[in-house]
Image (cartoon, rainbow, N blue to C red; front, side, top):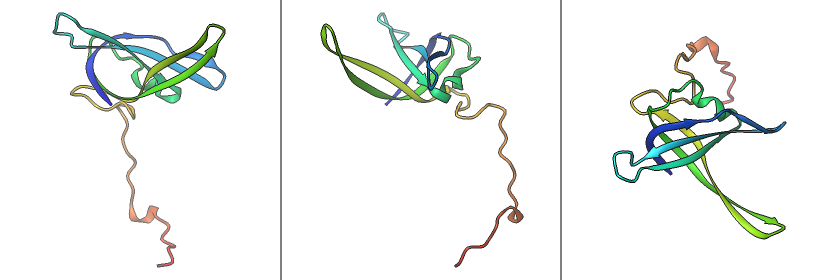
Length: 118
C-alpha cells in the first residue's frame, strides 16, 4: 500500500526491548480538504533511522504494510492494527533507503574473481 501526504509528527525512537525498537510518525493526507486525515505509522528496527533529521511539514510518500494481531487479555479478546512503513521518501527528493550522500563504489573487471565452471 502507498500513501502521500505531509509529515505532521515525528516521534523519538523507542527501545521496546533489547532486540526491538520502533519509531512512530504521523502523515496528514487530504490536507487541502475540510477533513484532513492524520494517520499514524511506525518504522521498526533499522528503518527507524530513515527519517532522522527530516523537518516537519515536508511532503512524503510511504509504502507500508497493514499488520493485525489478536490479544487475549483479562477483559477478553482485542484486535490491534499497525501501519508499518517499509519505504519512505521525500516527494521530489531522494529515497531514504540509503543516505543522501551515498556514492556507490566503482567496480572494475579486476574486482571479480572469475572462477565460474562454465
